[in-house]
Amino acid sequence: MNKHTFVICAYKESPYLEDCIRSLRAQTVKSRMIIVTSTPNEFIQSMARKYQIPYYVNEGEGGITQDWNFGYAKAGGGYITIAHQDDVYEKTYLARALKAFSSAKEPLIYFCNYYEIRNGEKVFKNRLLRVKRLMLLPLRIPCFRHSIWVRRRILSFGTPICCPSVCYVSGNLPKVIFQNHYRACEDWEAWEAISKRKGDFLYDPEPLMGHRIHADSETSSAIGAHKRTDEEYEMFRKFWPEWAARLIGSVYATGQNSNQV
Figure 1 (cartoon, rainbow, N blue to C red):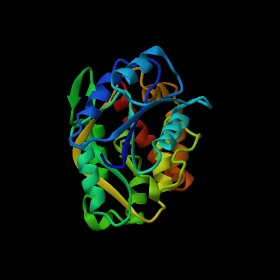
Figure 2 (figure 1 turned 90 degrees about the vertical axis):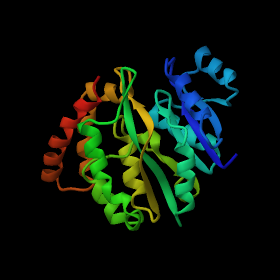
Figure 3 (figure 1 turned 135 degrees about the vertical axis):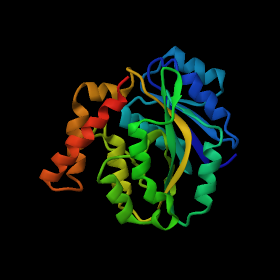
Figure 4 (figure 1 turned 135 degrees about the horizontal axis):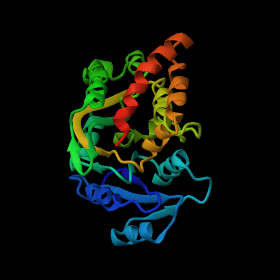
């Protein structure tokens, strides 16, 4: 057992929750697991009982970022991965994360390449995945993983970091990771803030997790409400003047179609 915790954020009654739990239990390196939710119900409780996982209810304000921050706090420090209930992890995810941390002087986050799960099938190649992998190419060079300038240039063109693939080194990060500000770009906002800190962004090019794309996901919901485009513009303004933010944002928005089922 190591100082790592998988925080499983559960919402309502996801038919994919058990697949997520099984993928975490199958890790080659064992880890602590907890389940957190702001929508307590018998289904989630039954999963916690079945797999003997500690279960915590967020009785404060609910929401994506609120639940993530609640779970992050309940993890109690160390290395933390916030697992989304619909996603799955390859069995070597944690082993590779810990190996990456051992090679870094001051790690901030580890994150890996990923594949999509669409209609039950693994999708390793599409336009969106190719673009994200291209954006992350500089971080495959060891001398760049400590560069604030490099990571901020990458993030200035969008967010290629898959949120549930991230493992946080809590001792090198603030106590609150996510701001209760956005619905669709809350992870990008967090990476932008963390990118200003001294330390390493550790990118693993191996596709070690599967991110499920389906109509009921929060990402698809936010895109359907046209909210994501407005939030993306605000994020681009953190890096660019207004005219450039609008231009880049208009191109970036076309990638939203890749998140639709």
